[in-house]
Amino acid sequence: MHGDFARITFDPSQGFTRVLAQQGRMLLEAELNEQTALHIHYLRKVIVDTIGPCWRAGDGFALAAGDSVNEFAIAAGRLYVDGILCELNANVTYGTQPFWPVPGIAPDAPVELPAIFLAYIEVHERHLSPVQMPALREIALGGRDTASRAQVAWQIRILTQDQVTAVPKQFAKLAEIRKAHPGPFVYRDGKLSDFVKALEDSARQLADVFSAGAPDQKACAGAKRFFDTWEQIGPLMRARARFDARNLDPCAIPADGQFRSRENQLYRVEIHKGGMAGEATFKWSRENGSVEFALSSVKTAQGGTITAMIDTLGRDRRTGLCEGDWVELTSDGFEFAEMAPPLGQITGIDRARRMVTLKVTTGAGIDFSACTLLRRWDQSLETAPDLGEDGAIPVRESSEGRWTPLERGVQVQFVPGGYYRTGDFWLIPARVETNDILWPQSTAGKPAALRPLGVERHRGVLGFGIKEQAQVTFTNCICTITPQCNR
Image (cartoon, rainbow, N blue to C red; front, side, top):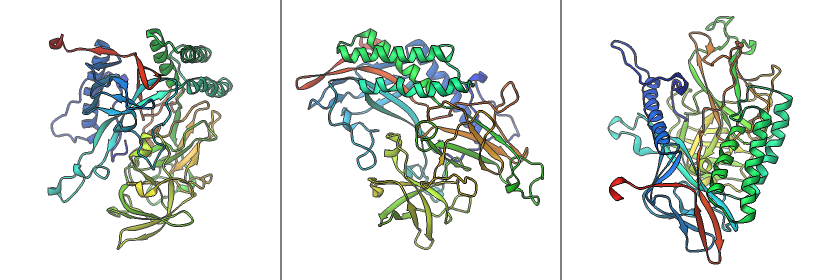
């Protein structure tokens, strides 16, 4: 979540039940947020343990034939995925669902449904700031920021036979890397060979269902296993703070300091372009990506030059913009499509008119006038010599001690054999008091390798769709719970 937070402290492995405020002590926003996270964690676990991981209330989210053979209907109601409530207030179709990518930013919903497909729901929590939703601001406070919000976003997606058979082939390359660099990856099935076999078996069984065209409840269980196994191909990253002579500032920081800054920071390392190492890229922010501005009147000129008006220039350097800064032009559509938004470098600022001019080297086919948000990132050629023309840093994996510097002594290391998804992120709190970062250590006393803190995506299998003549019929895979008073 791109909020202005001190840090994120919730850790389910600690077994905490509540946060206890004490008299006369300071209360941080992180502690209030942890209390909320504790409550939500316990509530969702109770729902899963008592009823199940994916179920609908009554007819909520029931899938049925649509007006054409390439469309299907989604019924209004409620559905729970891993205890997360998904709500739909009115009937919609596959192509008109509320969190589907908007035209002009990402491809529209497919116009040709395959003969047989698996329909599933993918759910994640997203952060909404007052910049994205101005109604959150209290007018009586002069439009100042207060609290932001977390929103549940869901999408009904389809999975085809070609997509299923491609996953094991894709992971075969990752498996070879993990064999060559045995590391800290943990598999639910035991060791790497067991995991590879489980992934191949679940994909083959699911592909056989597509070929036979006769799905049943056993096929639904196999689809769930496929998603559970597929989720384990995610990446790992380490972080540390080390002395860097280029950042030396003896007037303010001790000469033996590691993290070298006058201010506490919450660094955010976020995957920009997804894929394996060599094709994946990342970006970083010292403010958790919270320096953002509402966009209006976006105009594109020849040569990739973009001129846009923003709502404010920020209060100071920490929350403002300068020439040379890298920024992304984005909107909800990029997030819902899991698509890397274009990055551009600011070449000019007209502060009187609140106009910024930037140069964008990528983004062919993108309708920039549909972008609603400009977000600043802090990578530069000074700190990242291998910075690409598009403004992102290549993901380079290492297990031999090679680290990628961010700034002021903060470094990261990606573990070999990870698959990176656009939007994956890690948070690194850095503190002046200790001249170090807050990062867990392994039993060997080295920085621990951690999975991304988010985006955490939850999936539920809804059913198989089969095109028959002029409509689509569905084989239901999800439990339906009827309220007691309706029985």
